[in-house]
Every structure is written in C-alpha cells, then in structure tokens.
Length: 231
Image (cartoon, rainbow, N blue to C red; front, side, top):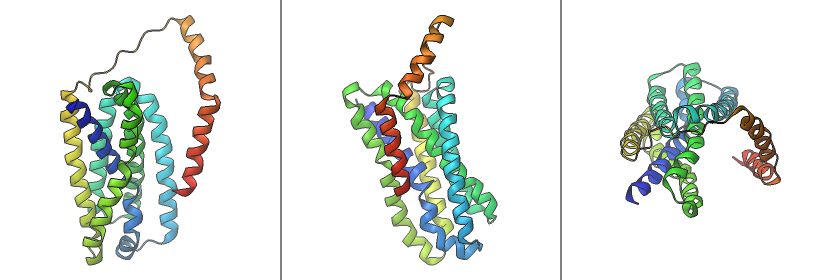
C-alpha cells in the first residue's frame, strides 16, 4: 500500500512538472522573457499554437508507443525529457530554440498522462482508480502554485532564467525518484499482450470502432473540447 501510494504521489508530481512547469510557466514569464529576448506577441501566439500541436501529436504517439515499450518506461522517459528541456531553456537566447523546447515540453505532458492509465490500472484497486486519477489530475495546480512562488522571487529581479533552473532541477529529482520507485514496484516490466488469431483480430477492430462512437465517449470528448476554450 505504501509503495502504491508513493507511485500515485510521484505520478502527481510529474503532472505538476509537465503541465504546471512545461505548459503554464511560460505564460507567467512572458513579460520578463519578452523584455530580455525581444520577441513580440505574435511569437507568443505561434508558440502557443505550436505547443498545442505538439501536445496533440505526442498524445497520438503515446497511444501507439505505450503498448510497445510499457507505460512505466514511457513515463520515466517523458519525465527525463521534460527535465532536460526545462534546463535547456535558460541556456538559450535564441527564440526559435526556446520555441522548439516549449513545444517539446507540451508534448511530454501528453506522453506522461496517457500511459498513467496503464500504470494506475496495475497498482491501484479498481474501486480506488477514480480517486487516484483525480489526485494525479490535480498535479497541474501544484505545479502552477510552485511557479507562483518562484516567479515573484526571481523574475522581479530580472532573473527569469533562475525560475527555469529551479523547476528543471525539481523535475530531475522527480524523474530520478520515479525511476527508482517504478523499478522497485516492477513497473518497468512490459505487460504481456495476449496474442490474437487473424479471425479474432478482425472481430476486435470493428468492436473498437463501436467503442469510440459510443455516446459517453463522444460526451467526454466534447466536454474536454469545450474545456480547451477555457484553458
């Protein structure tokens, strides 16, 4: 139980890093970075669009890649890439490079969240999975809260790069903890997928298509689509 609770807490921390730091920190530092690097608001708009595109593409990539390498490795790799991108941003003064890194950060938010369903299904009892996913989803708020503490401390003094350093180092620590705990919990082992005969495969594909067009699936998709306008 302690190990499972630690896994849920660490998953929450990675959501805090990939969403809270990777997506929302840039918005809080725009004025300070703009004054230092000299970009305009059209650049901010292009970066925002690029980040959302990166999130969408990486979400599709995660759906395809997670069954092949396992949810545990997918999450660990995403945390490591997120930490690296956060640490590279303060090293660059090139707005194009920073734009690429911000797009990559948005992508890691997707590649962390998608395989969490697989991991939570393996470590959390069925009746507690809703609670676990709720806790994990709240991680964004913790990340934004940390941003809100760091930005006034450093950005007001013209040290916006220090904010990126801090969140990058915090994410490195999180990624290392996730690697250790996942290894201890056996989550880096790939789950064995059952082999399907050609006839069974033919019957599964149509049933998957029917699942995707069920009313409750479309309702949840529509709700998330509308939430996108608010966020």
